[in-house]
Image (cartoon, rainbow, N blue to C red; front, side, top):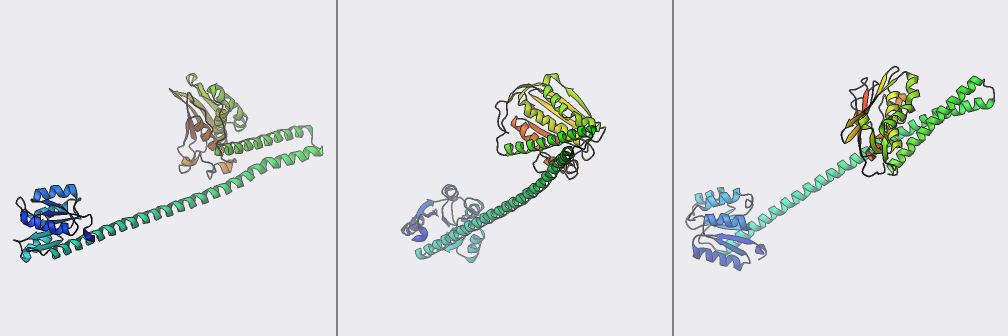
Length: 398
């Protein structure tokens, strides 16, 4: 019998001859059969064997078949198992109603025709199988819907990210064009004047200074672009050696001294002598400090102040660059170290491509350290903290 293939039926009856007769009918139809003679035995077997169906006599020695049925339906392991209640004693309509109210899926009375029993068993098993398949199909449909929703959300996020990246790159190209145009215009203009031979000696000196500044600006711009390219491709190596961070910081300060003096910005220093000995790439760490100082001077008003501190934190050291400048808006603070990100009132107003802080982050992380920014908001200044381990176990490309 197809409905009974490999299906286990639990046959429950305290009357041995009746139980034996039903077992023979069920086995003859191709079912596997387990037997129980009491309510307790039924519950124990059902929890262990999880039968496909239970044929349950109402009149049992330890508890009524109604109570057994209620407990089977209350157990998550057997709640979906069809139960046929059978009785030769409780045959009235009210008895049938009580059995069905207790959770039985069918209620048959003795004497029981084998054909009726098998037809009822087959119907309930087909119904149960249909419910199982429907639930499986529902779960699969729900999973497919969830997958489709995730895919749609992922595609939407990817599209938004791509659009944002393209916008940022377009803005970056526009800024790059602007940054190149300034020094190039200066070079072209002063070169033509020098070539004319009509400049007074004092103006020739001024022209040479302007040309030197323009060349320096173009060199730094080119270096930043090359560094970003190397970082993106993982080809910015580090030359890690023991070094003196105090000397690194001093060299970086020398690099921004003229710009600070031109604005009347005071640069203060506080160097903990216990924090100067570390391992790292001196050139790249000087580049880190120079970028932070250059930003601080750039965004600090004339007569403002920039402070550089080197602090000892045990196994780590911290370089802090704090200024009294324009500050950073809270909504932009999480993005200050990202490439192609610019504060609306920051870099665009003061010039620059905004690559410096992205380079800082990559170089610091390549040293096994981390960097973070803090600002109370616009007009409140900003502080950038670089935390480095005293020793870098293995140099890696930025």
